[in-house]
Image 1 (cartoon, helix red, strand yellow):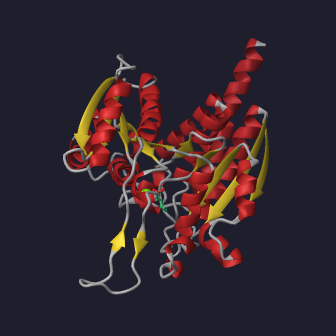
Image 2 (image 1 turned 135 degrees about the vertical axis):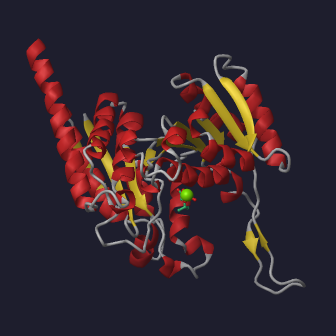
Image 3 (image 1 turned 90 degrees about the vertical axis):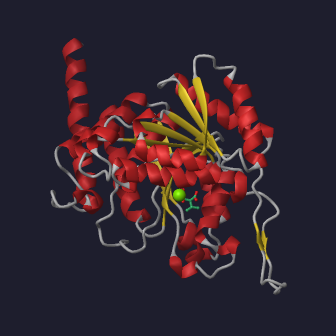
Amino acid sequence: MLLNLTILAGDGIGPEVTEQAVLVLQAAADAFGHQIQLQRKPIGGAALTAANDPLPADTVQACLASGAVLLGAVGNPAFDQNPGHLRPEAGLLRLRRELGAYANLRPAVFFPALEDCSPLRPEVVRGTDIMIVRELLGGAYFGQPRSISATSEPGGRVAVNTMRYSEAEIERIARVAFELAMKRRHKVLSVDKANVLECSRLWREVVTRIGKEYPGVKLGHQYVDSAAMLLVQRPTEFDVVLTENMFGDILSDQAGGVVGSLGLLASASIGGPVGLYEPVHGSAPDIAGKGIANPLGAILSGAMLLRHSFHLEAEAACVESAVSTVLSQGARTADLAGKTHSAISTEEMGRRVVEAVRASAGTVTTRTEKTA
Ligand code: IPM
Ligand code: MG
């Protein structure tokens, strides 16, 4: 198969981690007899510097013409004083909208080899396997009106954001969550703030209605404050978490902390014609260029790309099990090393995953040869 990819390295540690993810994708493609064709385009701060636009039209066109998009990270404090539409993050938000990527899947899986990395006791975190389904194109991120007033009013300037959801938007994301739950442990926890927000009351009503189409799935509802507490108290009880844009942003970082490092978390943003894959972590300007960032979030996003955009399940599983393998062999980047392990570089972590992919794919080939 020809895998036609657009790579958006972006800012901060984005280029370092996507470089390793591309090498791993290439290794998986080689092992399974696929070809990769890729083009690189600017986004975020890198695109602001090059073209004074965080999402140049050429980048959008390239993404829409490809089979999938792999993104590193956006964000650069140098642009903190820019108006909203000229911030690096605005490029990512526009890209999500251009790609129609309304469903953001963020798995948070505990690796047994990383027991000492979680701040939680091993018996609490062991077995954690959560799929956060974050609505990605609605809520306060996109709702109109939004503004920050220029002139001083009594009480100072005023800023406005609007949390907005339509029934159709809630329905389509709810379906994604229920479909995923059918292939997992048949549980959906819908997270909202229905005791306070109208958006959440509509959310709960619509999710409950869609839930009736899935009698095999156990649906629960939880207020977001209480869900945040339960996520650290009893993470293993969560299966699929269905939630709106901003709650999902917050809870997914928290889930990263629970399983040991945000650097491990991958995501898929799907629902439109072209899928967008990116690690959950940000651009981490403080460690950019030092070669110490954890590339596993980006590498595992590559696995999700294989699975969701190309339906290459065996290839995706091969990359995921390669990551498990290197972790169980003790490979740790700085965020995971703690006091017990010495840290390896971003590049070295990537190299080990590449090797593990080659080794396990080699096993597959041998088996086929035997049966042939
Ligand atoms: C994420 C990030 C983004 C978001 C930022 C960079 C706009 O935090 O993907 O979680 O808030 O969606
Ligand atoms: Mg976030």
